[in-house]
Image (cartoon, rainbow, N blue to C red):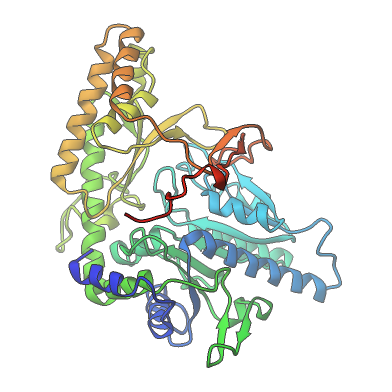
Length: 464
């Protein structure tokens, strides 16, 4: 962020939430996401998107409970359920587990582009479905899930059955990309079935870590049961977040970005991110070592015909998604070098300063491992070129190592160069927990370990 934002942050680091700035941010985002009334928008800042998702899930659950009670039905048998793709981020699954809602995971496939499958989603919906979580930017590959298509299916379902099922859009990343890069794409409150949207200010919102946002369509979709009226702060205030005390600095810097960059500034950033992500995707596909799973570099249909001022870089011409590049070893590479494990790439790139996670796709595709790069505003074309060069170097070094033993020796050398991790208080040790729930979030298989306070030196908390 620019020096002015840094100064604002440090000047307000010890201050609590500033309500006037908070309200302005909510109004701006409500307008950006086409809420019916931006002036009377209902929303709040949160601690990232995780808290926002819990709040939106709770609102849908309470609305479902009220509807059941009004109809004289039980809210316990068979109980509520929430529908989402098996590619769902862990925060969505947390809501279901923490607030006792059955989590119904729709399998993903290559045909569904590794995201919520609109051809299968209705198989998981019934009268006890409190809502459908639809993700604008999958964690795995960056694909946007088809919000409008799923909304249309739920419209048809309601017309046939009379059961109303709302949509919450998890736009943790896409909420600050789609409105600027592809403003014609319909995914937000333009769709009457979308009742709430969340986004992370500290991702593509370009603010500091620790701020997220949630906006409800209107007051009718935020149950009064979740709103607390407070009188002890010198005025009447309303709270409907899990946290009450909230630092002002990240919210002030978010407001700074909104007014400093404006629509055109955010659009420029988003278009550059997508352009560089396409550059990286094409560089990887141009070689023989990797296959790219993300689609933002692939045109929607046929060769591009530049006319009426349409640019080759216009994202409307390509498959929609985040500036994320997900890739894996090509079938040819795996056939020629079966002894080389893809996870070794992650380790060797880390030694060169790149943090590129390697992990499995969701259930039904878990045999496939991917490497993922998120391209943000600091990932320039020069850095893209450097990354490609480093990636090719480590890939070829493994391929030409001759034997698996030689490859492992290379990895050992890298590991020895890195300092040994320290043991931290609160770390986890051996143990077990429940079986995997189906998303990419793995079950906890460790016990909590702690360091007693008496083991710290007396001066451990003293500043020099």
